[in-house]
Length: 469
Image (tube, rainbow, N blue to C red):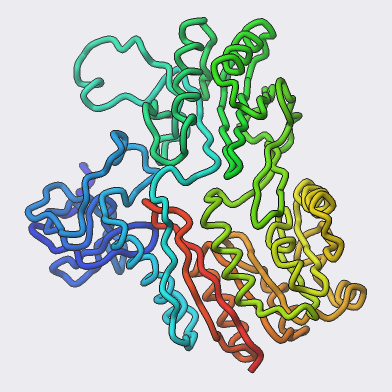
């Protein structure tokens, strides 16, 4: 017996809001919310539902009867397929409005936090070509458009260098032009693809685990330096050197040209040896005269200009006078710790990744900073009473955890310490709200400001200052 199709179609609904994860919102006639991925608030649309839950639907706009005034023409030819810049069809001032609204909703509705007067969201001056790091994947069986599939023709040009199609681990969109990273990123990517095809250097096949060219990483910095790393699956010295020599000759401005031979089942390079082929094994980022060494495995905020603004807000919220002992939790490569060190008595950074801590120590030495200390370990295990007894009671804690927020043991330890001030930097205001609610009995939020690090996407950072009650 055929299974009954439970999906529904609704006609001429007005899109009334934008919600979490970049989805727009409409109301169905039965009162349920519909989350829609390809519409803008203000559109009037027909919707085909794709999923039904107890309290909501998920759906797709199949026809637009009226276009929203918030709409703009997306500049990227890959928009709607790539999935990287989901909000390119919405004017930037409206993106900022919905990002700030989501942050405030999460803090007040999820966290039940009483907020002071909110400092308006800080937008990015550059709304395109702002990323300093991009990663692309090679494939010998690129994603085909519906038109190509329906043409009935045999498709011969199947090699691709680009991004994974959302939800498809083995399908790569061949990217002609990306609007996220400044020149010469597009030129490097397209030249490598063209040269590899002309010289019969095989692209990777994920399903069959064969081929030579696997991934390409391009890093740029505000100092004008460029790093290129090519990841190979199979090693062929002649073809590898042929390609790398071409890249070095074609783009002499590259500061660091590196490669990895990775025959394992996944693309991650963090457990692999990175080999420097030409130039340095690192590039430098700079901020207020401080230099930060960035290697192939380093974490650094991917929007350099907005990272500087984010750190200035963090330093301002910390309210340092020069006498404070500061703990920088989830310190990464110690960028924030070193950025605030001149205004603190001492800064202690803690981070789980050993390589990041080595980078932090080296950067501090190179910058002549002598009042920072960095320790490696799992935060919930390292950040204990014994650690506090050894390193001192902090006056200020700065915490910048991953998307999952702080572990409850870390929150409990902060409550046990009760520093005078906490500055909480977050890339996920929902988990930030959860943690703030746990701290609410002891702290009040005195300042909060969202920072847009990723224009054309729904992602947003938020900084909150908490003071002892």
